[in-house]
Image: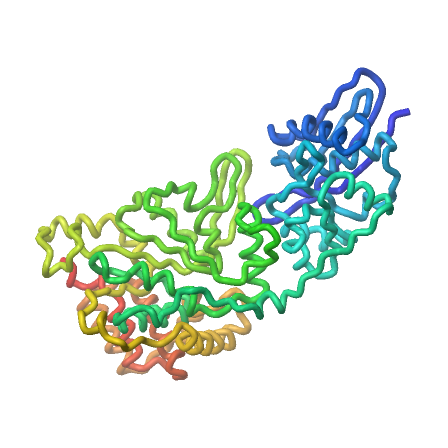
Length: 510
């Protein structure tokens, strides 16, 4: 008599998981395994991996026709993570195991030919779905157990191999659920080797980066080679506020899907820093390919995206940044479907001021050559970068002196204090987490100017030919400068400093 079994598994759509029911029917007829439910090549190859893993785990191969259905049947299934649930379903359908636990646990994992369960991708989103679906627990590869265990209230069962998973479901062996203390993970020393105190001089640039960190603003560093642009950019994450648990979960989900978590790593607790090469394609930056997956801007979610040699990036690649910078997410449409990935990052870009790398007054390049070089970065993209900061050559006495600047910890204290002011200000608007995310309504309410300050900004707009978007950026930066000073209102000195950070809008470069 044909036997039918059902095992609960899950697959990924964007950064979230959805249920996949693995139905296995063992019937009569010629020995044959058929997998239906829109499987891709990796899923179809499960037949050979699973049958060999069954044999090498001491189980017999089901005789007759075995039909495996991955429901829902109208959604394409990808990857090798269905190996374990398929194998468990075949064992249950052929009555080699007897258990009533199959509907209580979610199973996911790739099988080696020996029957070992290999580390997989996207386990955290699947664990989050399993919790929301009311499942008792989840069977995962042992290397992914810590990652899944950050989901409280879910039994996370680490399995080393197929036989261990089967014996656990039968009740023959007991496996203690993995538990992690997220508070202890965050309490661990989170400081890396990089620190702002290592940067000699460049106090004006450090001040600009402090403002950027305090308000979540985008920055463009402009200066000759060797002035420390990359060195400064790499240290920006060290002065950003620590990740909250929700931010850490979001960031970890993205890295889990791409497979960038180390074995045994539970959470990403440091803000990410991504620095793609200027030869990166739009798919590499945004994500995509045939089956949409997160790109560099999503891997930088809640962290920093650093684009060095900005004019060397292809123009069409840079233009794709405009939507993510405005909306904090990226939507990718392909034949396989439409996916939306989070991309709330701080953009830090660096570039030379002229084609030969020298400042305009020292360059041998003609004004036309300089303008053509700067023109590789479009005006609309520049308008979305709040601070344009000149990075001059460091003087010898600053390089050779013993004096060191403030540490990252000291700067971060002021940044965190400014962010706390903003969180209180936007408490009724949870989607706005910092000044850089303000909309027109918030600008009108929280960035009001007195008559003298308004006149100062009006004259600057006329003299320097600022765009309407540049006007908004100046107000946002001035609001952050005021927050760092713990000032309730934006004053003239705050506006004046904010105007200084619009270098490429001024006539200096023509």
